[in-house]
Image 1 (cartoon, helix red, strand yellow):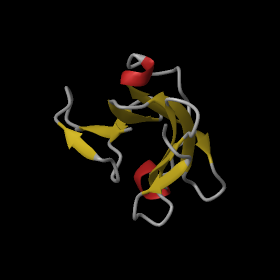
Image 2 (spheres, helix red, strand yellow):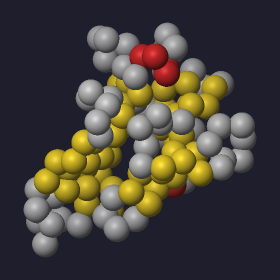
Image 3 (spheres, helix red, strand yellow):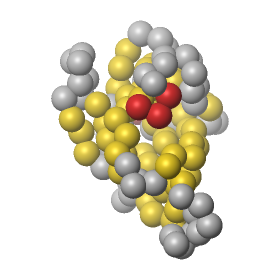
Image 4 (cartoon, helix red, strand yellow):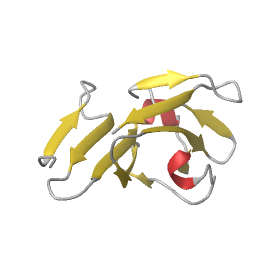
Length: 114
């Protein structure tokens, strides 16, 4: 059984935070795109393996400080590739992802390991 443990990156509250649930085989993963990467965006969606690369299914919430944030529950013991779609016309990787792999377009895919 996994303990309810929170792991975060060393990015000062930006990027990816993981919370492993004690009684479940899922991890709550909080994705945060900093305002510096969002560049004044109106909308950001997260697109990846976990939503079959659907560009409209998973919009992120814009915070008062200009960051965008979203929490998903993902099954454990997997790696998930993803990217952010900014204003429906520009891709961005997660600067604080666990790793990056080549993507189909000019931007690498980000990977979160849970």
